Length: 384
Ligand SMILES: Cc1cc2nc3c(=O)[nH]c(=O)nc-3n(C[C@H](O)[C@H](O)[C@H](O)COP(=O)(O)OP(=O)(O)OC[C@H]3O[C@@H](n4cnc5c(N)ncnc54)[C@H](O)[C@@H]3O)c2cc1C
Image (cartoon, rainbow, N blue to C red; front, side, top):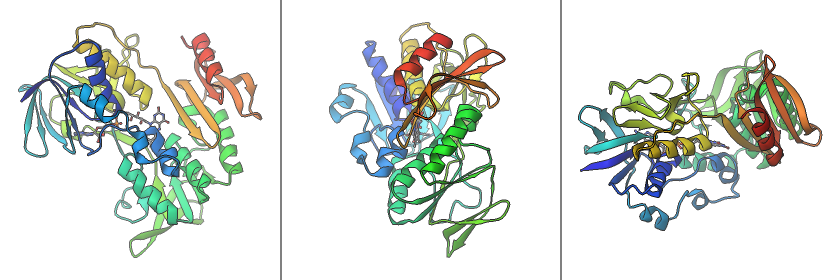
């Protein structure tokens, strides 16, 4: 069969593309191929409410059965795309089928990086999918000591959740403060204090030298500078890589993601959205790949618009939120580690504030802690 639109990746980017197409009156045939066997679900709660047990798996479903049926799209789930032929306009699947397409939308997201040499050790985990989440949760329920390697957004969230589950948690990162790359040094220091206050053992400016095991099950993590941390579970959160392996040799430009123009076009009749897509900035021309849910939704809507004939371009704008303990943090813009920060609302002590980040005297970002309205106002005032 040849679908008018074939979407590869059945998560928030892929689903939003289909919904936006239908909302724009698109009546053509649509197929969606997804490697996971689940109907589309939301990933942000995995490191928070699902891992803690506050939510069950059914609460992360993005849409109900009826809403999906109303889209009149064929979902081929538990099937992986393995090869793209851009000339023939076909995608081969892992079950031997070949699907034709008029327009192709790639929304394949990311693959978590693993710790070289530790992949086969029991108790060493990553977190990207629902299965990862339920397996990690099952291990945490019987564990005492958890070591999180990597203090980026995901590592910090997992550390917070595990701590709230009553576990002994250690957080290790070569950076001097957590989330340095995403929030800069000042807010990173506040985060470091927050986690330490909550009882997380912080090993900042530290690398790991070894993982110790007993009969194939991890037991400890050795950190450089000496010292060994006992570990029943190790969670590896050292970043992800774009899920583009199957596209190697397809002729698409792959460089830290699928390289696209400012409208998400990656080649003739091929588009890419979400975490896997590196869109050109319409002003600077620079490619930017963002790993957040809001961006996946926005890009999907723009690609749907492009497929149905619109000519707008979209300027991806860095934004993410994170929940850790009782803090909801929202970050707009790109914050270099050497940005200058000033408090423009609230106080750090009250854990309710907005900070403005500047680089060379120019506003480059705003960060809010428990200040949803004020941070949006600051974003509109300084960054628009
Ligand atoms: C634990 C966790 C917590 C997060 N928390 C936040 C948060 O607080 N705030 C925020 O903004 N963002 C958060 N994110 C990021 C957010 O979830 C992503 O930005 C979003 O899911 C991106 O959507 P996507 O559709 O581009 O890709 P994904 O959601 O990664 O989906 C890609 C899908 O494509 C499938 N796929 C891959 N290759 C193939 C193939 N060859 N064939 C078929 N299917 C394939 C994958 O199996 C997957 O189902 C979090 C992510 C994780 C993992």
